[in-house]
Length: 387
Image 1 (cartoon, one colour):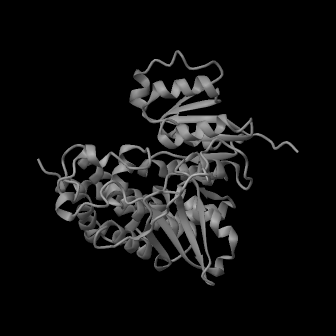
Image 2 (cartoon, helix red, strand yellow; image 1 turned 90 degrees about the vertical axis):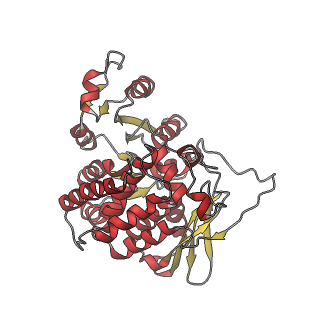
């Protein structure tokens, strides 16, 4: 029996996740259709996407930049919405079945929240929504009776592997990490790392912020926090292992010692498609493993003294409250300063540690309190920036 077309709103369509999602839509055989697209400021790319996929809406969230852009090439039948309120209008559309939350960083929190409030299934690529407001966001999803489906390759892998057993049978979750480009450098060599070197990831093609996070292993720290809330597993039951090949995307170890892994080439189109089409598995455009070729898989321990960002992740996952919001905001600001040449590579995690330690912890914050402490943490990072 033919399945009904699923209408998708892609928030952050011009980024790496968004463009991969559009590739999935193109290869879906009509199973998926774009209802809305959004971009912050890459409006030329947004118009090109609109001309190909003919969405009902496009949203330009940078209102001042949108007012200066010539939208004459926007296709007939596609309406322009401007500003963050445009995202809220899109996710409230009764025709939207799934919202792909792919806006990078803290900027994606409100639109993820609005999608859940409007009882939409959320395919979550914006891990910061759970890092900042994990307990609040998951409670909202439960209250509205909707699912949050992970798009991060590691969390998608865990989500898939968990189907092999019951929650009470889980011993631990194991997140894999490539180790980034500096796995073999010592501490003195790390002090000399340049921006250009940090942006050369050995496996994945990602945006600059996420690529730097991979180099510091802060991405894995944030994923520990995300996993704690998404799967309702305490921090001590989450482990990280270094897997340079990025073929095993994560594992679940059950109480009997069985370990279930999800494997595939490093291609984000697979977890995106799994989330957009869930609970079905369908043929798609993602790469496949070539089993006619030799395949070596390596795993190495992730040592906390070498990767101090991981310790921050475990601490925030254990503490909850405002700690995740502070870590995320401090890291975003510190990475921005590093990319601007205002902070050394090895100072990113040190600055985050300093801000996290000095903040006034609140165990049960409101959404407004999380947003306020996010602003505070970003301002605190400015004290670390050198002239």
